[in-house]
Length: 248
Image 1 (cartoon, rainbow, N blue to C red):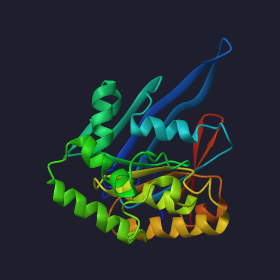
Image 2: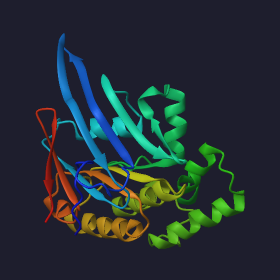
Image 3: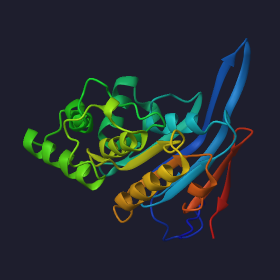
Image 4: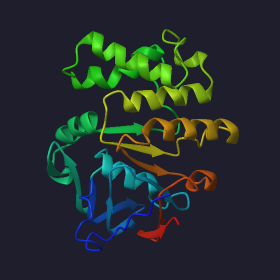
């Protein structure tokens, strides 16, 4: 495993960060009280990394992924992402532009799959291309979706509906969907949390196999130590801070 420094000044030849967090904070109002979930978080993430976010339930793992994806906006601070040859400050975009940016550049894998029950497996995988009005022709998009489903072992289930699939099969569909538009990064929120240990290990192995060597960043929130053991870096969220623990 490789170890990547989070300090951009550690080497003059350090690669540019794909994602850069600058003093990122998020607070919520609960029962009249201001609860700080993330407090002045600064961190960098690089192409080709697999980084695990660890922490107790409610520590802010999902919140951090939502801020990086633009699903949510921070209370203060900035999220910078390198895309199309420039560094984009996601926090300066309005909600509509954040949505468009996310659809084009970010793939998301959820714990509970979030497949649309009225769409077939193939239609679910094609959905990101349809939403972005991709320049790919309909046939090219169809072919890419079919190839990804073949890669996740569901080549015979194109016309199957999600309720006819097992949990592991649904998560495989979600992986293919997250990759179909060739995003810069994948954000995965407890992607094996709703699966048993054996199926979860199979899904993780498949995910790593599909992204290793592509240069994509994989940022995953998890409670599972068996998943964290595969990461290039571990980051712990505790008391609103993001604490480094490099994997040796």
